[in-house]
View 1 (cartoon, rainbow, N blue to C red):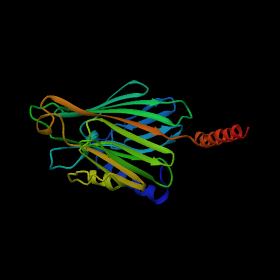
View 2 (cartoon, rainbow, N blue to C red):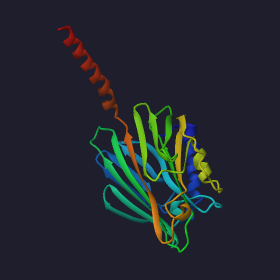
View 3 (cartoon, rainbow, N blue to C red):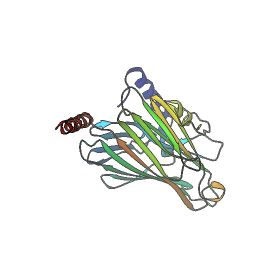
View 4 (tube, rainbow, N blue to C red):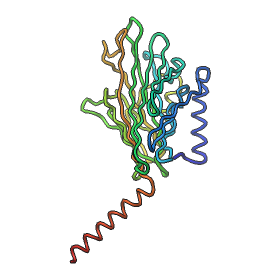
Length: 280
C-alpha cells in the first residue's frame, strides 16, 4: 500500500530527485520475478531498485536498494552507478545481476518463493557479493535501504542485534501484516530505523554517512537500513583479488482479508463447540 495525498507527492518528488541525480548511467531494465501468489520487480538500472513486492495482488514495497562507498571521504552512490547491469534470469523466480567497473564489482542474487493463493505468504532470498579485482585491499562500505508499506495508519519497525552487537535483522509490522528480514551472515556494523525520508536523504546528500544505530521507529511511514563496513580480509577490508559478501532472507506475512476474517470466525466456532461439549 502507498500513502495518499501530500505525503505521496513528497515521496515521489524525493525519489525522482535521487534518480535524476544519476540519470546518465541509469537504464530502464526492469526484471519481474514470479512464483505462485508473488511478484517482485527490480529496476536494475536505477536506484529505484526493488520497487514492487506484490502478494495476492497487493503491493507492499516502495523501494529497497543498495548504496556503497569506497574509503571514508566520499559520498555514497547506488550500486547501479558502478556500471551498466549484466542480467541473468535462469528461471521465472531467479535473478542474477552484476555491476563491475574493472576495479571492483557487486553481484546481487534474488530468489523468490511464493505460496498458494490466499496464503498471504512470500519469501525472498538475497545474496550480495563484492569483488576486489585490484592488487590492494579494498575499504568498501555497503548500505541497504528498505521502505516497505504494509498497511494504512503507519507501520512500526524494530532492528535486532546479535550477541556481538551487530545488526542481524528487522521486523516491520502493521496489524496482522509483518515483514521480517534476517541477516544470515555477516551481521551489519550499523543500522538505522527512521521515518521517511530521513535515511534516503542522508544516502543522497553528497556526504559520507554512518547510520546512527537507532533501533526502532513508528508508527508512521517507517524506513530502515543496514551498513556493512567490516569484511573478512586484512584490517576488515576485502583482500586483493578476492570476494566477500552477505546473505539475507525476507519473509512477508500479509493475510488477505478473507483469510484474516476466517481466523477469528474459526476460533469463535471452536470455542462455541467446546462450550456445548462442556454443557453436555
